[in-house]
Amino acid sequence: MTLDRNKQISGVSYNYLNLPDQIDLEQDEMKHIFYAYDALGTKLQKTTYGTGYLPGPATDYCGRFVYSDGNLQFVQHAEGRLVPRENGGFDYQYYLKDHLGNTRITMNQNGTVLQEDTYYPFGMNISGLSYSNTSPENKYRYNGKELQDEFGLDWYDYGARFYDAVLGRWHVVDPLAEESFEWTPYRYGFNNPIIFKDPRGMLETRYEDEEGNELLNTNDGSSDVVVVPNENIEEFQAIIDFAEETGTIESLDDPHWNDNMKAEFLGFESIQEMEETLSNVSSQWSRQKLIEVIQGNNDFSLVEFAIVEVISQLANPLNHIPSPVKLKGKLPLKQKGSAKANSWHQFNREMGKGKFTKKKYGSSEAASKARRSAYKKWKKEKNFE
Image (cartoon, rainbow, N blue to C red; front, top):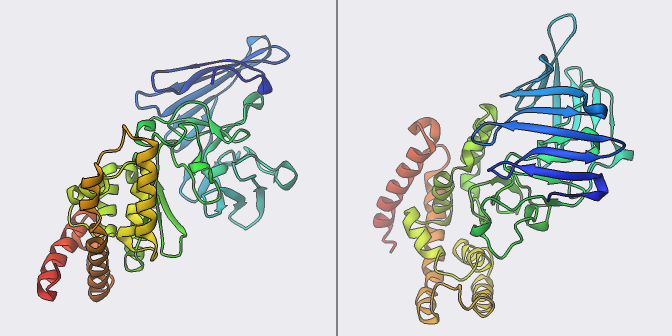
């Protein structure tokens, strides 16, 4: 997007990462917003120029420290922020968030509500149900992302892209669009913002519990939805909590870590075995149905998968990977996969909680490896195939 007459945007220029570095607004007079990034696309500075090309405040982003014209404005942390007082010290402010990470309440250490934010489904603020009584105003709102509200811009910065909550769309294509060609690269959260969120503006894997509640969304270049078995919930949530507490939540976007988790939850003994199985379909739609077959989500999963696979092959005859013969050869995987998944769940129930933890083995990868090794021995003892 390079032009938006609704917001009087007359031009947008982008850098090599498809991030905006200059936005021109043709209002009563020309106004400008400039952004500076490092080589990985991390935002370092934002400067504005208003009427008469007079410079406005320059905002510098130094990790969790945010400065305006060289003066510290606040320090972000996992649960809120520290705002410096004029006479020294800090005010401690905390965020109350909903299931999608949207900041709903900003309050101080005494429990006094300083700001309340309410949103339409795709993130636009409901002005009549929102108010602010704090300075500086908290702009980390929808999904916990920073609102760029200079000159009425009202875009959210997600890291990989900027998002317009008025449109419910991104302004540039998904950096990983080729991984899910059947979806528009401008869509937000699979067009279902009540359930899905988009942590960084790229393709996401959704992890949910057996009741369908969201546990985690990661930008790993996949669009799988995977159920975390009840016996793995506590350990999985501990990993998330640790990443949030240490400010390393983006490390969970790592594709290898996600592949490890998915292989474990789907009952595969290796990432290679998982990919050999899941890649043998014609579309992401079929892939998701096959995941449901393997996890045994309902009695009709296999029928649904077969129907979806046929439709996918008819819709994309040049793109489907397996021939009908190869696909037929893979269909017995349903019985094999369900048995494998059931044996995996039975194994975890017998092992109990706390036996294969990150704390015990030093890393989640080492814990997963130990779990799989024990699983192989257990299968031989139980005479599972």
